[in-house]
Length: 163
Ligand code: MN
Image 1 (tube, rainbow, N blue to C red):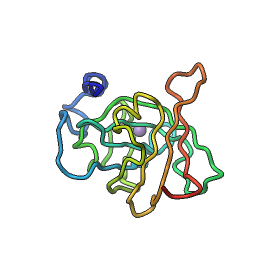
Image 2 (image 1 turned 90 degrees about the vertical axis):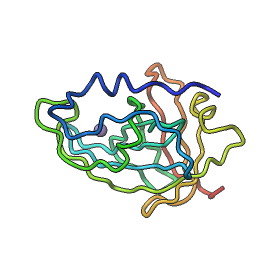
Image 3 (image 1 turned 180 degrees about the vertical axis):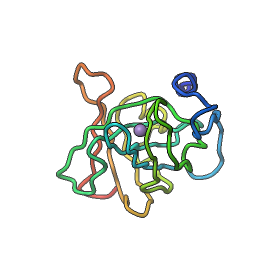
């Protein structure tokens, strides 16, 4: 099992005496793993897709937002791990702070890993298929790391057939 990244990058980017965002920590949960999508009106509007993996929220910024059309391949840029507490965060990050702007929960729910490997291994391999049980996002979605030089580039897409 791979080791989850720690939350140092998340913590270093934020001033918790100014931002309402949670400090948080790594939490081992015993519930079904969760996902959340947060609509983030920052300097550039984007949607943050987060998957619970090994007690943190692995996170991707999707500039165009998730699509439920299998024909749409959406760029998803891997960003820093967020604490589990972030899954319920909504609010306004003040001007002058990292990610300044409003955050709204766009969708949330639980997910099932559809690959034979554990989800942390799939993450390390850059090859994830999950079944999302959300209100807007339902069914099988893939997150695939691209082979481009830009090492944080992944593609998010709906699978044609649900696994
Ligand atoms: Mn964001």
